Amino acid sequence: MLVNNNEIIGINPKFLKAVEFAKNVAVTKSPVLIVGESGTGKRTLCSYIHLKSARNEKPLLVVDCSKKGKEVENDILGYRDEDGKFHKGVLERANNGMVVFANIECLEEGFQKKLYTILSELTDYDLDIRAIATTTKNLSKYVGSGRFYRALFSFFSGTQITMPALRDRKEDLRGITEYYCNLYAHENNLDSIQVTDDALEKISSYYWAQNYNEFELVIENSVKNCENGIVDRNAIEVGEKKSESRLSDDQDDTLKLMSLKEAEKLLIKKALIHTSENRTQAAKILGVSIRTLRNKINEYRSEGTQYFVNLR
Image (cartoon, rainbow, N blue to C red):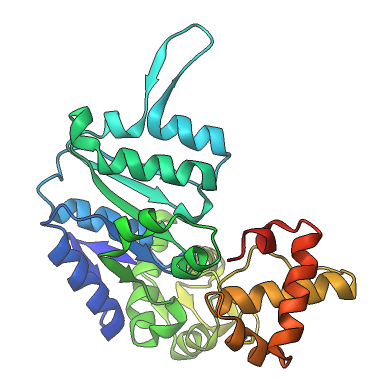
């Protein structure tokens, strides 16, 4: 995601739709939920909304909700240090401005309800905050599995913007590549830079699993390593196109060696999350009877497995 003269560069229809929607909601006070893979430019879109809003001269502060629970709570609400001095949280420091709750799916479950209550009652504290949340997850599935507070999800999801992955914006890759090549050429004191067609073909065919996070690093290294200001295929240091198979939206469980029983439990959990806990659909996906699935759920519940204990 690139900003040039306060405008975002790109021609992909899904990307332009996201930008246009962001521009329209910028003039409102509505909370916003921005969804997309890591590195797709969610925080840049937050900055764009702030820039286009009437709050653009007020603070824009970001809280990374993936940090430790108490640290996140302190960042938001403030805290007293060992000397008794109070440090304001972002809600006070960003008054009349905007706060971004990045990776909001990582908020501890016990704090989600508390945050919703506070955000719903900001006027009682004489605070005027525009709240935006970002996530890489399908929060509706988190709500269905009891892992995210429904009211907090509803608070943000009334206005939702989805950022497309970089690999799905092939028509934008030439312009984005040239932008970054020129940027890093300037930083490396190169008078000019040229990107060959075969280099662009290699860039276009690569999967870019980490989106801009990966793309910028590759282009920076390519410019540093190119000869005579020419970025050719050999200068683009990436492998062959990666497999497009992806893990499900719930990627908290990393692939690892485990017992068959644990693997079975994990597959059942993922099927239930995927179907928003519709047991009939989950049973069809798993290829078992609804009775078998029910018995397994009861077994895991009796073992005290938290997800199944909380399963409705």
